[in-house]
Image (tube, rainbow, N blue to C red; front, side, top):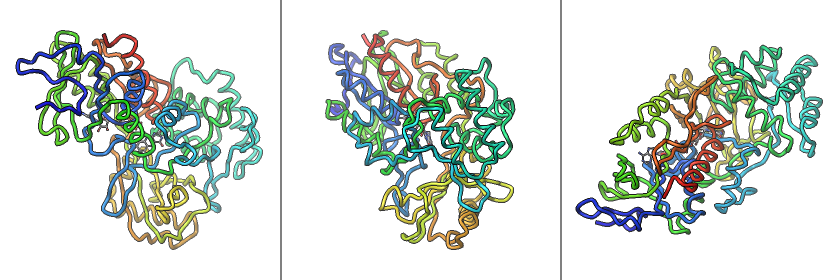
Length: 476
Ligand SMILES: Cc1cc2nc3c(=O)[nH]c(=O)nc-3n(C[C@H](O)[C@H](O)[C@H](O)COP(=O)(O)OP(=O)(O)OC[C@H]3O[C@@H](n4cnc5c(N)ncnc54)[C@H](O)[C@@H]3O)c2cc1C
């Protein structure tokens, strides 16, 4: 049986293939944001790309989820104006960015009466660091000492070129820069959790500085904007990327899991694929392969390649420690609305206040009126709670923080925990390059070497880098 929807070349009965048929056929394994980015770039360069995804829904760790109650996302995602490659490729794939994303100035705003702070970057096109200065002058809930301490941090970091000689934890960095307890609690800790999904005491100061350099410290004010998806995460990029790919002769197969990879005669890659999408198990040949799965799944595929020593790379790939994110969706009456699209919340697990941010989904998508999404990053301890208790605790936290008793009584809730949402972004973490050392076989994913922590942008940049490597000669 020949599957004409798979662009690679099936072998004949003796396992032989016609090399001319495969010379520009590339398989991308995994339709997360990294795989979609690689696929788009390769299709644009004229390659015949087959995108193979084990799951039924495209998007990997940023995807739509069908639940018994409603269609949701696997977790609320925030993009930044600094996500230049994600925005470029979304545009290339035909996504209308103004409609798909709500743009807000960088902000950290807590519900009134919770002794939080209110910090919003001005919408005026002031260059950095003036926009930060203007935001500081306007900020409420910070003492003069807090503001001076933030100003000091920003000046010193800029002076250092946002670089550290030796990486350390974010907590150490904040201590070194003499940051006040209040600023750490209300600003740096929530920012660190949101950006790195790792608590400051375990998070890499250098990666944190990289994110701050491109947002808070960016010369282009729009780089610091926060972009909130108005459409579901699969629609936001992966499905548009796949439509782009198919329009250029490529093929997309969801429900197709790659079981094994083999190198044939040092020039072709044979993939064993299983799943309903390919009608059982199938072998297909490609001249190039992008492994765009998570790190541990990449290790499993690499480990089993006969005749190649990938032990060192596999060790690096399995060394990433997973970090969870939990999203608690609470549905209220459709008329229920917060004053802002999202707020920061003060978490205190000892008090059963687990929520760190709350998003009013109704302000992003009218079809989700009355739906609030509460985010808990690095959620290990919270996720260990029974779901009913966690949802109840979060609803009570909202009722208390917003002084609105009705928020304590949602009509229904849904708790989604992604246990392997990201890897712990610890100081000095060694991340592998895109190249594997094997010809025509490259890696893509949020975990490969780069400036950013595990984010959509790091995944997309990695996908673009993998495609560039293949184009520049990894494929004969
Ligand atoms: C709840 C949550 C909240 C987040 N919040 C943010 C945020 O606010 N901002 C931000 O920028 N980032 C955020 N992230 C991180 C971001 O989602 C990830 O960094 C990014 O999606 C990783 O993309 P990826 O393509 O590298 O990997 P993945 O998305 O993991 O994609 C890998 C794909 O490969 C597939 N696959 C695996 N093995 C095989 C196989 N053998 N054959 C075929 N397919 C296979 C998988 O099914 C998957 O679809 C969040 C993540 C989560 C989970």
